Image 1: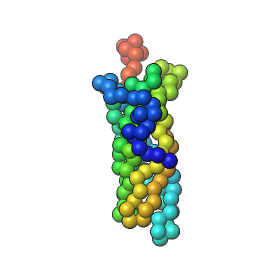
Image 2: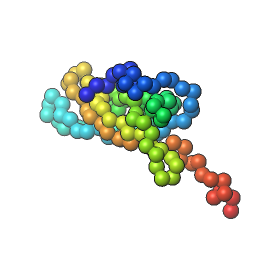
Image 3: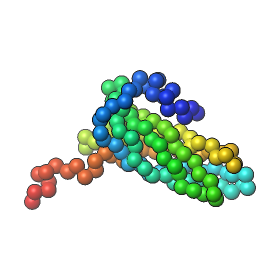
Image 4: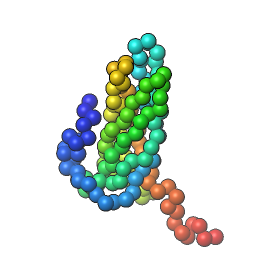
Length: 130
């Protein structure tokens, strides 16, 4: 599975933007086994980069380190899929890929997650003035 962001951006025909919204994300990677046959996974949380217009929608860059397990760490470097609209007018993005390989044990972890909605506290003023 390719994790080359530049390759993905070219295939999506995406360009940089000054658009300012982003999304939080939190997930756990899939389990993998290290050289000592210890099965483990990692957790990761963060905030995407700003929106990048792409084919009538937009995507976001995702870069984050996972938590450390047994002295090793991985990084996620990816681009989200396009916006998926929700009934409430908000949207999310899907992210699927593999972490960087760990130098010591030469393994990586797959991940698949949805971002959280942007600006969750954006509540209609009429609902707040009681």
